[in-house]
Image (cartoon, rainbow, N blue to C red; front, top):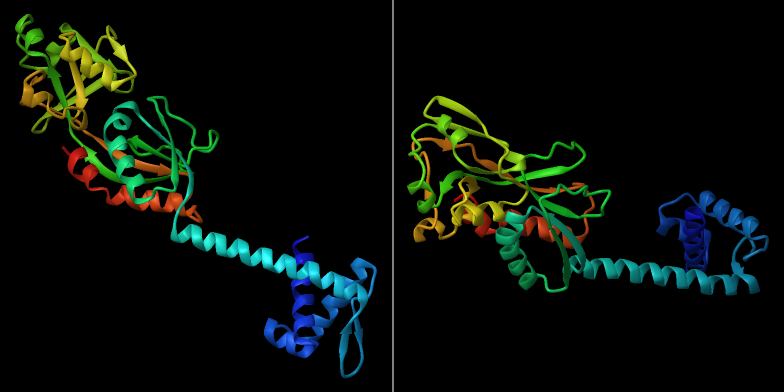
Length: 298
């Protein structure tokens, strides 16, 4: 089929040029190849398109009618090329994005608002969930994720590194024994995210791995934050979820001499090549988005 379309274009070129020699020159092909391909096209169609003499060639009746359709095909091809060019100049279409809940409710929401100001013709369909979605199987174009993607078929580009902090409400701490060492966390109420069942803390060169009781487990960091604010216990939160909670004093640091391991934020998408103009624009926008650089890094 593809070769047939090429031969139709070549036939239209021969008809326009009025000779095999001129058509071959414009197509960058040997004259013999052009003549052979037109003959093969006629054989495939079962009808002669050109009357040939040693000096001239003329379209047959069938050739005149066939040329109309060949030119329509070429016009449609040109329209398709122009449409893609306009798309590159003004990205449009739909982007499907997935993100964890905490990032989706903060960074992603702010970034997408700014992105649509810059690219109003791009439609965004956003899934905010702490479940890790299969980008290819479920048809997502791009994801924001914490941690480097384990799937080698995905492209992961590091946006920034985020500190995490152990926090609790002042009211909770006032009613429970003071915390001076990570080993004491086992006797406290802790709200843990299912992806962070262990908290790794360090003080200078000393590291401590906290194996926490699964007394209060969640898959949503926003839930963990609000539970901690309500006095349910100690939790580990990334800096981008804190905003003004520390300034207002609704949460305060725990074990301040110990630092929790942070996590990295990645922009993840299925392929590096031939991405749509909308996706290419989104990737470039996300990589340069200042709020992620400033806010996520805490």
